[in-house]
Length: 256
Image (tube, rainbow, N blue to C red):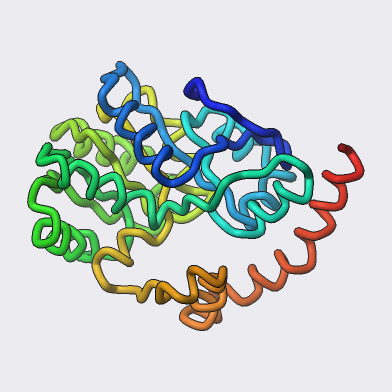
């Protein structure tokens, strides 16, 4: 399902060698093609890289992605160490609003569906999007209940809600690997041109979770800001990544 872009192989998956501007254009090109089935974007970070080593279904979801974009400076740093340099990070939290702004700047309408976050959060995000980018039409929002992925009736409901409005862009904020597995399993039935698996972006756009300030992002410290904001959920994950990821890079280097 991948586009005709330059890709490098790392950690058992292929990653597109694109900067942020090129990634936005690639997303717009996919939307313009109007293919019959939904194509989707995934954004690997350290946690994804570790999960990919032991989760075959997650690897299959990555293999089916139209775009695989590096989300996280450690992935970019590792690519340079391995002699396969990626130009920069392209996080889902940056990509989604950048695609929306590109349409808004061109004065072209973009129809969007927001799937994920807590009850009422997507609606808040929709209000902010409408205020900041009037050419972006948030045609639908839904926050599925915990464990929805194990309930076939919930999946049918979500597909029905999305297909009823036929958005050009489906923003999925369900967390990894749930969001990637779900869209991979259901892409053929979704009547949308593009889905972006984007983690906490709906929370950020709603103002429910604070995004790291620009200076921290420039210094590659967004992970620290997120960990301090949600220590119970993220501290153990980041600690594991700090220990295991260097060994994963070393294995990749030795294989090379």
